[in-house]
Structure formats: structure tokens, C-alpha cells
Image 1 (cartoon, rainbow, N blue to C red):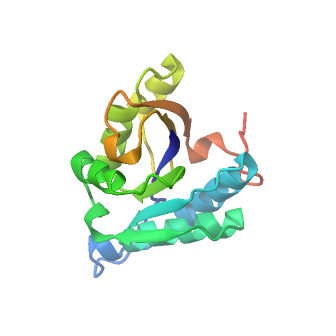
Image 2 (cartoon, helix red, strand yellow):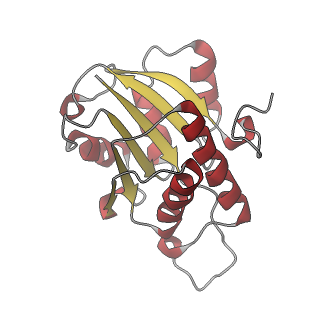
Image 3 (cartoon, rainbow, N blue to C red):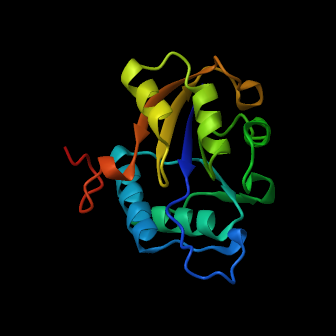
Length: 178
């Protein structure tokens, strides 16, 4: 019924010990990875109708860089509850999305985002499931096709169709580096 994209925030900076975890910005590597992911989304024609974003600095910076690189102006909804959220909280946020939203993106944090992706993966191709179980690094994008309205999304109602890591992309284009 729709497409769901789970994007982990890009790499953050641990250099300023005076900042709280919530207030950590992206580092140079994170900025570059967010730019690559934005170009990838643009090249793939992925345009979310709504983006749910944790209100932490690193998630806000991630989506800002992704949108700038994609040349996009998506509808953003910041949500304090998504900061370090567990899968139950993430699914609750998804359940609240109106059925009129066809493509949804959520930008959040591990371990909750990765756990949510694993639960929703469904009967994905073996290679994708293996890669998902192997690692979900910063700025990784998991894409799902869903078979039910958002308010009914649960394990078994979606299929993992893509898993894209920054290391999979060429810095210049955002396309596969292989």
C-alpha cells in the first residue's frame, strides 16, 4: 500500500565533550554521507510525502543535508519521541501517519531503527536480509514495500526491497561504487 524508508542519522561528532548526546552535530564524514544519500534518493526518484525525524541535532542535520543534496523540500515532522526510540515507539509513530501518505521516511537512531528494520524485513531476498543482520551503519537507508495501511503496519506486512549504505555509493554521484 505504501513505501517506507528508514534512514539512520549520519555520523555525528564526539569532539565537544560539553555537548549532550542530543546536541551532537554531524562530523565531516557524516555531512558527506548525507549528501551522497540525498543524491541517491534524487537519482532513484524517491520523494517522501512525509518525513518523521527525531528532534536531535544530528537527525535534523541529516535530513537537511539529504534534502539539499536531493534538491527537495519534503514535508518534515519533528518528533521528540523518536530520539533514541525503541521499535514500539517507532511503530507507534508510523501508525499515526494518515493513510493519504503513500511514501513515508523516518530518520532516527540505533539500536531502535535497526531493530525496527529487522522486524519489518519480511521475506526479503536472502542477500538483503544477510546485509541487514550484518550491519546498519550511520546514514544507511532501508526501503520497504508495505501491504497494509500505516495504522496496521506490523511484522509480516512489509518487504525489505533495498538496503543502501554510504559505502555502497560513489561520493561523486551517490550511485553504486562497484
